[in-house]
Image (cartoon, rainbow, N blue to C red; front, side, top):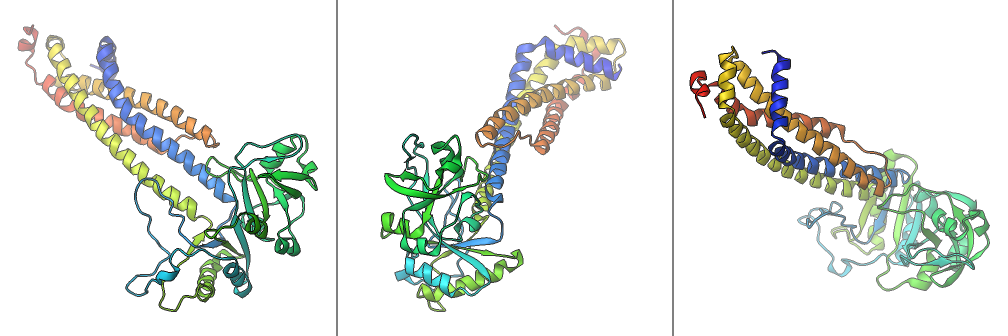
Length: 426
């Protein structure tokens, strides 16, 4: 029998048992579908995160009073900023202590490294902004910053100007509108917002600038914001739990480690820490959030691979069982093929091709469904069409191997049948 004849006969047998084939294909497709779906979704999430942080640059870091502790699942994130507890002691009176206004100002004044320092304070989230005719959805965030906040966070001014030192110190009710907020309030021409009074959480603010549009994602929306001075936030919203964030940007990435070391050395005495006291603040590099999330997405990917592997083992067992049933059902056919000159090799090839074809059908169905549904996530995350080609190719090879492994014993059993006994089989 030629290769073409063997494949044609295998396909005829597959198409002749539609229900059995469909069930087996569905089992195999399920495992590949789950794998490709989650891998595609993870790739889309990774692309979205990369887009979100690409404008922030890798040459900045911030000082915070506590760890972001970003994780997926219940695991505890390691505290990389702390030195071994055998070498340093915790100063209990300072653990969890917020960064105060005086501490933040003292750092900005004392930090001697050639870098830009910016102070910021988070205001309320999910508030409404409005003017005389329009209002936003309750999804705007208010941030308090200084003259360096825009540069440290990758923002540029489209219209208007930056804060002056006098405005920052006085805490006047002036603000800059993010591009999304400005377009919502002034859809015809966002530039009209300049020097207008808008209500931000029921408080009137005079607009001095509109920001350029910045890359956003489903994780971080950078356009629906209102930026005012940190002293304005401090005056209107500060509580005992309010903590300042200190941002630092160096001009050369090679200076980052030295800048972080200098920042720790400068901030320790401000936080009243002795040489042997463990630091009670955290250093966040600009890409640390993305790294933390991507690390956790990596754990999810590994778990998905494990689940898909278990599913494919079950599919292989089911496929082997079906192929053994097919051997029994087609015993007389096998005897006839041998009687007409077919060899044991032809019989083995027929059953192996049949098993591999069923597996490949499952692979194709699972891959197509996984990529399509995974890209629904990509659309929600505002990224482009994603195809994890490496995993698509790996899925095809794995399913081919599953089909080959599942068909080996049934093919061997079929090839060893005695043609005389097989022809008499009823």
